[in-house]
Length: 178
Image 1 (cartoon, rainbow, N blue to C red):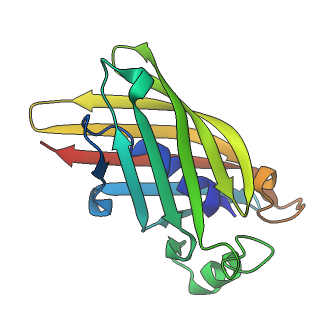
Image 2 (image 1 turned 120 degrees about the horizontal axis):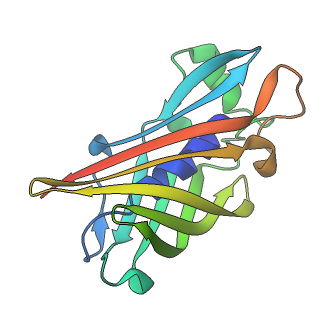
């Protein structure tokens, strides 16, 4: 359930490439998440993300990021839990193979921080999201990092639970070598 939210986060983090449309190399992208279960954080990740972007800090009106995360690439280092997360009460992987993020606006906040506004779709539920981004541009690489939280229940991931938190914390890192 948290994994769907994390997928969205990953998609957002990948937006920071050059001004030409580029398919991101997922080996340089990490999408991690964590959620409290019985008071203890369960950590996980998604290993498959496909991102296209057109980022130009001087032309943010025409900048965008679109991402797709493959649901069955979720891993919490527990095969039994991973299999359960793919079932209908969580991500329903049989009917929903992917999570999608489509940006609608990118705004500068400070010199290297931005705010991405977009639509995140998980299990056919689409919600507006606002994701803070930190972009570091050096001579060797361009990197983007996003840390944010989502409510898993907004997307129908997992039911009501007194042991499982509704809040999923997501961290996405993406680096492109120049």
